[in-house]
Image (cartoon, rainbow, N blue to C red):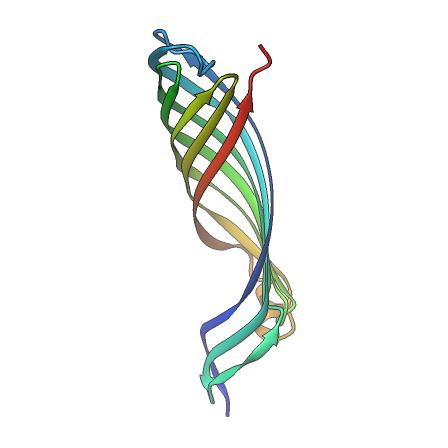
Length: 205
């Protein structure tokens, strides 16, 4: 008799696709200015809207199941996870420029909601749900001006915390098939991103 417990682990390769669109507005105070070539310093209010779509595919997977006997083998495709989020950030930042060097930092709170689909290839099972919650977005950056060009480096941390519900669709085993008729299940989502960006901006005047 084989008994499968609810634990599995695996190691594989990952491919990722990301689409991100944002409209972020700022209101500057003091003598700070959106043109980094102008000397000034001061706070700014930032807010707007951001849409993100991401898809991960886990493949070439070496899988472990906590069963009796233990299962340990290569299974190929593991799972794909796709999600879309709608974010509404609002925060405060500070900018300093002496005409040659520019420094900027900001911190925003985020209200967000999203939709996700987690598909397990070997089980032919979908987990489909909606989630909403709050988050934070932190940026710190510095750059140097060379004539009409700005070379800029920025570090960003993006965190989202949420909860919601999901349903199952599909499945091969009896328990997986029955699970889609048992209503909704509670879920929690915690997403963390670190990004390091480099940009070159050219001014036309």
